[in-house]
Length: 268
Image (cartoon, one colour):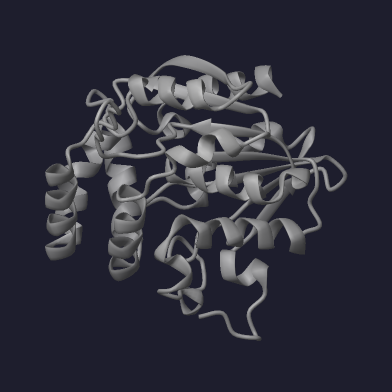
């Protein structure tokens, strides 16, 4: 849990680059990843913006002592972390860039304190991964439960088998290897708990509450967040912009950084 000797920078291994007086851009990584996943994207905004990178507690170089089961039992706990970073760094007019589960974390943070955020960039967002009635999330409940059971019994084996599928781009196996290494470097116990929070979450009712303008970046052939999910997010976020990318897979920040940068720059 958080102790008095921890500050936000240490807890989240915060790293800044760019112009201190520029409009802040806060980059949040997805499940199994860390801030290094933005290394081809974030520097492209350093000439004009104050770029802030961080690791969720349990990932990358974050302080594992800060992990608290109760705080991180829902995505709201991670949204609270985002708001603490925003407050402690005195950030306003923030452009939040969130990949995968962090897209919904950013939505929750912006709903709670909309005055702090100017725009959201949601890369591969999904408000719910499990199919429900007419809603198509891409997975049956049995599929998710089987995945979580496999992950719980053999996290490293699950990562090695599943992560290349998540990455896509089978013609570029080095991308799958990098993402696998990132997953395997994450604390396994925390990763298992974060997986449950991520894949069992349901934020569909939160989407209409968002008043911050949002860009949705939707990849082709994304097994985690399909184009049907992207369309759903776009339909339920008032005033949002949907961009269908040529990039394939779930991680365009690694597989297609130039296209990702261009789409963000065109929007902001």
